[in-house]
Image (cartoon, rainbow, N blue to C red):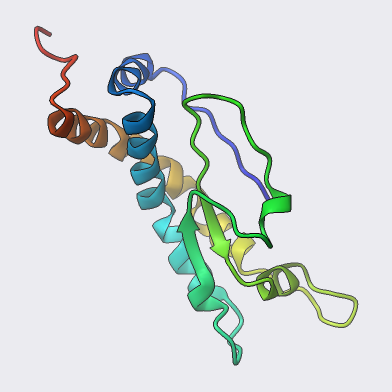
Length: 147
């Protein structure tokens, strides 16, 4: 499942991110995304079926996909776009989430997203400005002087 959202009305923040440069801007967005996805990751770990393996421990937040997950994602060509993923690194996770002909589905990721999806957006909204300000201070960049 892929969920996309676009924040609008944040022109000032976008300008400040651009002023940081592509690398610092993307890293700033990744830090915010990682922080925002923690509630989903933690809930998914709680909801994951208990097994002999490490399914719950394999649920991580990352900006990259492993070889099992790669075919599911779409890549974007946008220069400043950041993709963050939360989910199991184990291929067993897909079988548990969606089931098979011999095993019923046990959705744990969907349940976690349904419970915390709105919270993800709230965290992004709350954390984006302070994270940009911290990055600006560390980089010695300031667009807010004189305002």
